[in-house]
Structures are given as C-alpha cells and as structure tokens.
Amino acid sequence: MELIGKLKRQHQIINEYTYEIGNEMDKANPNIGHLVELLSIFSASLLFHLNVEDMELYLKMENYTHDSPTLVSLFEQYQKTMFGLKDSLLDYASKYSDPLTIEMNISNFRNETLEIFSHLKNRIDREESEFYPLIEEILRNVKDEQ
Image (cartoon, rainbow, N blue to C red):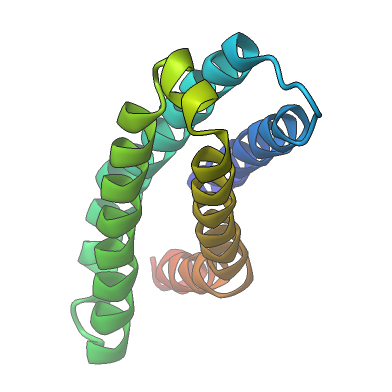
C-alpha cells in the first residue's frame, strides 16, 4: 500500500533527526542553536507524520474495521496513544524552542529528550512490526474481494 510506504519513509526521516539530535546532545559542548534547529525540524516532521496517520490512515481504515470489534479496539488504542504522544511532543517542543532554556536546563533537556525518543522508538517499532502489516493485510483482503 502506497500510504504505508509513505509512513515508513516518514519514520526514517524522524529517526534520522533523533540520531542527529542525540549526537549533538551528547557532545561535551553541544551547539545549542543547532539543537534548536534540529528540534524544530524534528518536531515539524513528527507532527506532520502524526497528522497523516490521523487524517489518511485512521479515517480510511474506519471503513474496513467496523465489522471487527478487535480491529476497532486496536485502532482506538493506536489513535489514543497517538494523541498522547502528540500532546507530549507539543509540550516538549514548546518548552525547548528557546536556546537559553536548553542551555540553562541541559540536564533536564537531555533526560526529557531521551524519554521522548524512547516512547517514539517504541511506537515506531510497534507500528512497523504489528500495526502496518495488519493494515496491509486488511487492504489486501479488501482488494481481493473487489
């Protein structure tokens, strides 16, 4: 499915930025201006991805899952965690959009960044290992029925 490929490519971009942010953050004297720039691009990329999931994936899949309580429950679970992740990301991005805030709270910044990245990694791993394959299977079955 084209949409799944698009979402996986977005995951790759998001992962590249987490890697770049992690590398910069781990330096003895990180370039705070560069960190803010990377965080801005990372946040925008992730928010775009979450919106694509919400608007293109979840809405489209509602048409195919209404006959299965299990699938409805799974989709609701993913959608709910998406909103939680989105809220956390917005709070984090807002909090650390100012270089001085990062510089004055570098230890907290590192800890919060690692926590966000950990949640994000788990989410991406689950999507790619269980959620997207399930969607691809549903859509294959729908296509076969047509």
